[in-house]
Every structure is written in C-alpha cells, then in structure tokens.
Image 1: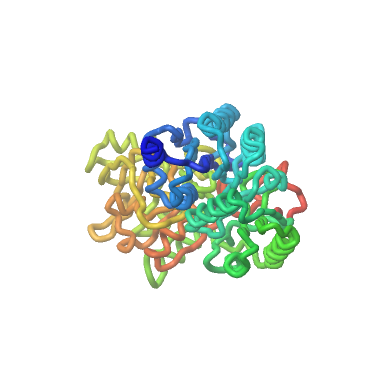
Image 2 (image 1 turned 90 degrees about the vertical axis):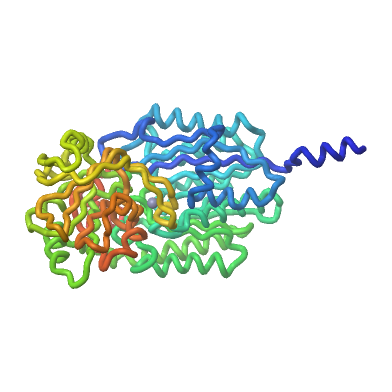
Length: 508
Ligand SMILES: [Zn+2]
C-alpha cells in the first residue's frame, strides 16, 4: 500500500498526450529561386533547445504551450519545428523530407490524444500548389481518429478541403501579426475542451471572389479595421462562436484558392458557423471598390519625404517585401535617394558579395562598388555606392517586444555598415549590407548596429504592412511606395495560371 502510494506520487499520471508541431512557409510563385531544405531553420522535437526556443518566443506555439502546460496531467510530444524566410516555391525534396519528419516526430512518441499544428496556409510546393492542404491531409491520414486543431497565418490561401482534414482552423486576426500567441492559446483551448467533451466544433468558410490587395491589410486602421473588430466582437459576445477569423490571403501565390476568407468555428451549430462566415465574407466583398492602387512611385515618394515637416519618414518598399518572398536587394529606392541627393537615409540591402568587399576593405576602409540588383532581373540594376566602412556585426539580434509574427530571434548573417556618400559629421547616410535576407519586422535590425532611427530622415523598410509594428513607434510618417519587384502591389504585373481569371482585383 505504502509502496503503491509512493509510486503514485513520483510517477507523472498523464491523462492525455498532445503533439505539437510547426511547419511554416509563405511561398512566392513569382520568385524563381525555389526554397530549399537548407533555407529552413529546423528544430527537431528531441533537440534540447526545443522548449527554451518556444518559451522565448511570442508565437502560436508559445500560445499552445501556455495552455497545455497549465495542466500537469498533459504530456507534451514535441514535434518538428521548421520555418524559412519567404522565397520561391518549396522544392519537392525539401517538402517531402520536412513533412515526413514532422509526421515521424509525432508518430514515434505516440499514441496521441490530440494534435496542435501550426501551418502557414500559403505554402506552395513545386508539386503541390496548395501545400498546406496536402500536409494536413497526410497528418490526418497518419492520425485518423484524434482531434487536430490547426493555426494559419492571416496571409493563408485556404482551400475548402483543408477544413475537412482538421477539427478546427484558427487564423491570425491581425496584421501586423501581433496576435499569434493569443491565436495559439485559443487553438489549444479548443483542443482541450474538445477532448473533455465540453464542445463539438463545426466549421464553415466562405471566400469572396476577390483579391484583397496587400496595400489594405493593416487591421489597425483603414478598411480592414472594422471587419477585424467585428470578428473580435463576435468571439467575445457569443459563447457558441469558438473562433472567428477574417483573413486577407496572399496575392503572390499562383494557386487555385488564392484570396481572402472568413472562417468560423462554432460549438455544434453548423447554421451559425455558415451564417457568420457568409456575413463576414460579405463585408470583405462590400469594400472592394475602396481597394485603390494609389501608392506613389519611388521618385515622388523620395521627393515628398525630403520635404516632410517631420522626420523620420519610413518608406515601405512594397515591391521588395522580404516577408512576402522578394529578393531583398531591390535598388529602386536607393537609386532615387542617391539621384535626388537625399540625406539622413538608412537602407538595408541583401548583398553577400558587397559584405565580402567591405570585409576586405576593413573598418575605416573605402567602399566603392555596385550594390543590390544581383538576385534576379525584377529588382532593379546594381547601383554604384561610394562610402566608408563603419562597422561589422554577426547580424544576430533579438526583439523583446511583440512585433509582426511574434518572433524573438533574428539572424541576418554577417553585416557591414557603410557610411555612404553625402554623409556629414551630423547627418549620416547608412547602407546596411547583409549576408541573409531578413524581413524588417523589428527596429532592432538597425538599432543593434548603433543606428538611431529618430536621428535619421528617411528609413527604407523592405516590406508592406508587416514592418508597421516596428516602424510606427519611431516614425513621423509611413508611406507605402509602389516599387516594382516580386511583391509589386499590382497583380496586373504578374501572369497567373492557377488563380481563377475572374477574381475581382486581379486585373485592376
Ligand atoms: Zn502573414
């Protein structure tokens, strides 16, 4: 008796086992460079840094863990984590190996009672345009009988079939994505309550036949704001609504189900789910005529920024939106800054060869060479820049605040800071050259290099909406600039094959 009691006290008495895994990629069909296995940051489920990695983040997996770790009787099975900076479609071998490893990581530690799976929703594989649907189909096939609750990014292009492979689909409601952790918590609560038999999720999705242009994805202002508020209000006011997601889709993926959607998860009430999904989808459709492509070009954006009453002005290089899968070395804005002799600017540019040249010159050495425009033919010509090498950095930085995507750790590779031509002792022009493409989701990308944004006049950020959470607190004004590139905001620049031809907004 005594012995038995002792055993009960020392052995964990798990009542449930939950698998957690994450496979994230937003794939740009118009970037010709495929995303390879080596592009992914991969953390295996049994890696010692798995748990510390997620505990330090603010993303959906952190949200899953917030909830499931509250109950000491739940055993967590740590599945594969894999994520890569957006680029071209995922190469077939990379996709196959990652999905196999993800399923193995969950199967080998089973049996499981439920799964929490973070997928992007806009992954394109070379052999599966709607790759997240295929991933989920395989996970469902491997685990046919247990609840699977899935999270997606606001930029997901969701196929109807996706909903058939999961118990509930919860999508970020906000862009910039600062609600990733909260959406993860919501997903985990739905899974645990389903396992207890408290709720019976049913879901419905309605997609309006349109492109919801990326210029209008800010959910904190403008046309999307009231629709997002509506979905949040719906979740807060009706206990039968387990999740209400209104998402904009991702216009750079040439896939059959590109575009926005409303996804409702309700407790046992299919009519309610269908009705609310239709109502919110109708709200997206109703604002279609307001989605005008009215952003200034590079020339006028720089001209206006130089004459601004208050600085700094942040110029969003929408055609070279690294978080949307562009090259990261577009030169259209840099060319205008030099041509118009702007001062006090900061440009971050992916250019490994230029970093090497700066290294050769050394600190204080002369920098004199063409930069950027080297990845492909869509992002402008290389531009000759003269200057002085100021400093180097290993390119690792952290973000402690909640910013787009909820990430803490950033790596942009070996980085050189050039004080470019036109700099004066009190007003510098900074060209930051990096060895890796890194989306400007955090202001620490430049702050950790000793560049103070408040002392500058013009900050160029290679993104569209995502950098707002980082740049709004330090900028007098944010201007979206209509630049060419793999993420040009006008879908008319691209030739689509799989997207339905009659989508509103495809040919503005
Ligand atoms: Zn996104």
